[in-house]
Length: 269
Figure (cartoon, rainbow, N blue to C red):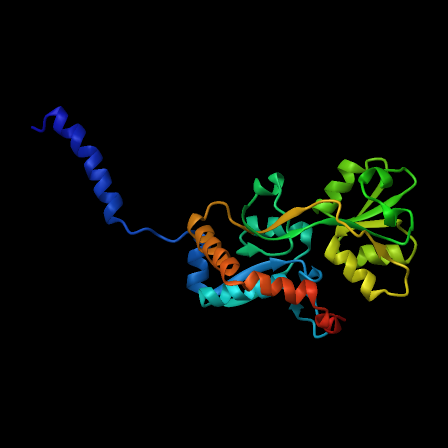
């Protein structure tokens, strides 16, 4: 009969041999991408120049180019899913998409729901307004007034910023950036809080509307790619690609294309 000491030694050894002999399996997200040869990327398509819709109804922008690069590296097809910004993380949690690339800032609250890879760029909050006084604001105290009506994208860091730094002002949350701009143009809001790039683009596209934005951002925020927290292998794969894009200059090329050049504006509706 096997003695107690031998049994105690053999048990861990057998367990170890089973672990070594069993091949590692890809996580659920990675396995699905491999099996179906498709990368499903969620984005709101209403945050130019990061992600927006062109005249033909297609989606274009910095985030689209980055998503296409990732799909090409994985040798799979890219499937862009246009989803309201506030619903993107829910779609990720429900496995309706494989990742979120949609100008999404990395925050502690969002990191409880998803794993963020990056940052791949930085964003900053600004305000879009017709009010000459607000246009000179350099901190939130200047628009924390009960007589002001502010607009921000729902479930965004812009909305959170407004709630935390301007609690006295009325906040209206809108489903997309264009809805917020429309409220400004109709005189139904005093200012919109949004990323500086979106505010600058609105000024360019509505040259005769008297819209202005800040010269310097109110905040600086890291922007990342959100993926499922449980799939470590998929996280590692995407992180390796993103690191490579930074080292080879792809991210710099995308910033130049979408932030420094303006010829793409002609493709907007």
